[in-house]
Every structure is written in C-alpha cells, then in structure tokens.
Image (cartoon, rainbow, N blue to C red; front, top):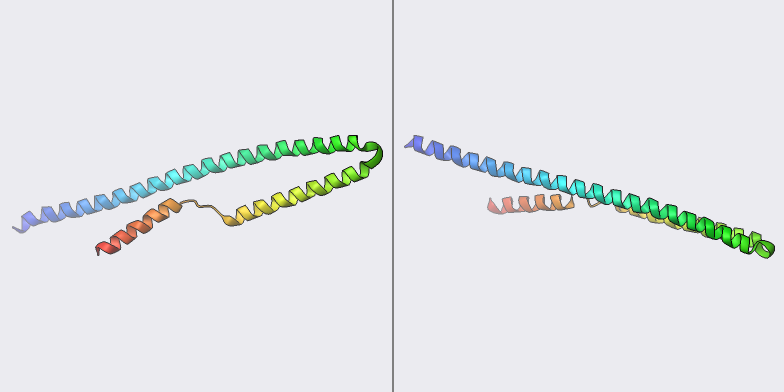
Length: 127
C-alpha cells in the first residue's frame, strides 16, 4: 500500500513544481513584454523630442532673423535683446521640465511587481 502512495506523492510534487515553474515562466515573459514596451515608448519619445526641438529651433532662429531685419532701422538692438531673453527663458523652462521628468522616474516593471504581490498575497492566504 505504501508503494501506491509514493507515485501519487511524486505526481503531486511534480504537479506543484510544474505549476511553480509555469508561474515563474509567465512572470518572466511579462517582464520581457514590459521591457519591450518601455523600450518602444522611450524610442518614440526620443524621436518626437529631437524632431520637435530641431523644428522649433529652426522656427525660432528664422523668427529672430525676420524680426531683426524688420526692425533693423529703428530697434535692432531691442529686437536682438528681446529675442535673446525669450530664447534663454524658453531654454531654462525646457531644462526645468526635463529635470522634473527625470526625477519622476519610470514605471518599468510596475505590472510585474503588482502581479508578484498578488501571487504572494494569494500564497499567504492559502497557508
């Protein structure tokens, strides 16, 4: 009779081990998906940021040139001074936004960590 219990116990242990390995595999796959999503999000953010900066930079330069030429006879120093102040102010504002975003951090792996917390809570309830 003890021999008939051993295969059942071994089968149960194998089943538990298989379920545990399956849970670990699922969590690792979720981590991989989150990492890929974050990589794509950062690439799109970088592309849009660089493109916007280049286009806005060219637009500001041409606006400053236009205003300087327009006001050349009477107010050329005022036009250049105001353009300089506005451009430096915009640069400082943008740098402050970038620093705030950097301090905020990333939510990378937040879904995986939440799933692991739920797994631990479910395991603690079963005990």
